[in-house]
Length: 294
Image (cartoon, rainbow, N blue to C red):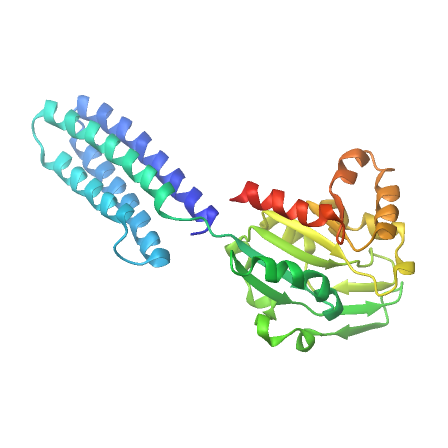
């Protein structure tokens, strides 16, 4: 089960708790019609949680059985005429909701969704190690995007699509086929560097800020076929500025990024997110994030 889905269910259970308090208040005031509508809404919420669980985890889970018990208590509350007994049912609802919350946490392991968003096939070589490290522990998707190479004027642009060069064994598919706004992955690994507006260079065929807004964590992995091509301008593009972690390929590139980012107003914080890919801290950064997400 995805963490964001689990959180939505926690929120819905909290809403049910507030509804229980309102239910008691309306019962005291004997607001019959309002009570009936509220009970109906509460039942619909409980059933929605159960349906969502079954769609992801299948039938026969303990949490769904507890949700069914909760719905039965709602029915008993509705048909109970004795005021004292109704309040008793209200306490039972609260207790059952607590059981549902505990079961939700214990029964379903959180499974992360991780996206590897790659334009250049050679950059995939850097990402591949992380894919193989996590593919059995998380739901991993390799997404490809084309890119264009253009001069500073933007008038001469050549489109490139290297998706066919990504190994078929990782089942790559196009970024456009993945609804990032709907799925909201827990982590995204992306390559670069890319040109700033008004500069010549290469530009990915997707909006990085859309990725940033819909991902839990973004790992930026700048790739250089020749490290002599690394320059400080590359440290000021959105991928570098707004990613959570930057994994640079070498100590030499690390020095360039550290020097460039130390000049920023928040330079001290920016430097803390830079790690050398082949250094001991490269995997350490991922391990720390993994523990936090789990």
